Length: 297
Image (cartoon, rainbow, N blue to C red; front, side):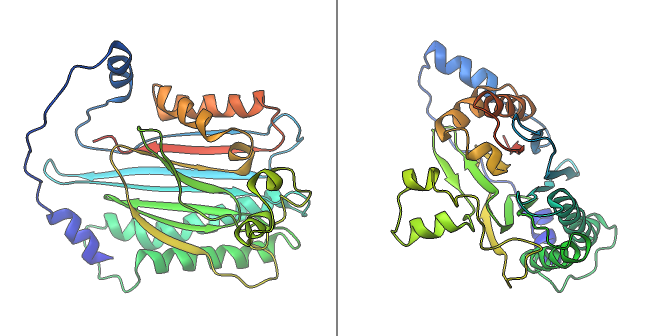
């Protein structure tokens, strides 16, 4: 990891290139004026939202957001940790499971990535970010087994360092890239029974939406079945948003509505509020958690 930090600190600025422009319509100008934010230093702008929903009497979701920056006037290195955990409905202590998983995961990431990253005398790190994130998830799993016997939770964790996004994922909470041109890229794979049936060609997406076992997971923290978290790394595209959410959001609001709300809002925080409102307006059948961030420059 220390090699990555040194590389980020020593990287050279890219030379400017000529860009041809064309007149924009009034609608396009309005969109640009609301979305384009020029900040110095370049930084991650993030917001969160959460609701118990309209049909639940308690909240089983837990989220965590931390956003930091290391800048010296020449090199700017943004850093962020985002976590969404959804305690599994129908299991005991889902709220405890999601809270413990989030606390343990972030504790490991802060100790092994954040503190070394900002240390005045960083020491060589033998583990990669992916290895650290896997270790964090497995430690969180053991903590859930001990603290919430019979409980379970999803866990979707993102670490952003520089322009690099690393994701550790278990369950059916999700992470997305949302692009200004209308594309929405799902970065995680649901560890659910219906998703597996879709992959095997046994049911369709439409059938999955009303399947009686659509909420059954085959991989989750706290459950006895052995598992490996999905770990992946992506460049953070610019311009784009990254969004983490529980199924109380993505399972209720169509992607087209998510895109419209995100791109029309004045900030990620306002977008999160509007996404929560939209999910509740659609019935709010589950707890809702969302984290939204972009890296505009």
